[in-house]
Amino acid sequence: MRLIDIIERLRTRMVKRIAYCILVLLILVDFIIPRHEIHFFGDTIPGFWSLFGFISCVIIIVVSKWIGHHWLMKDDGYYDQ
Image (cartoon, rainbow, N blue to C red; front, top):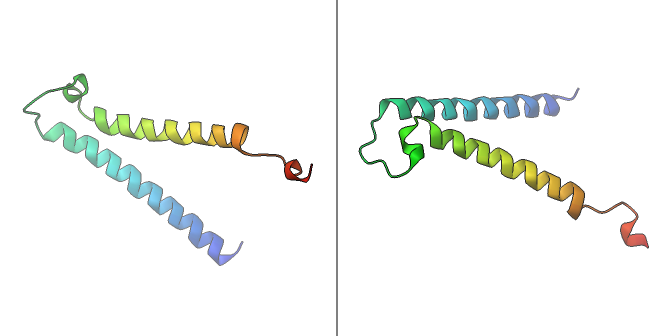
């Protein structure tokens, strides 16, 4: 394995860990800071909007990959015809 690959893998792991830590901190802070005005049902559930945003991003990525693989990508010989 090349050194660049090892550094890239460690950097990717580090970024994932930092992102997960930030998500957990946002959820924990939501338990501590009280809500004065409740406008939506999600405001009553601690950590709802953090988890909602995370799940929404995952769904957007999965759907985008699916569209890219099944609709946008063409076979290697598609343009040779």
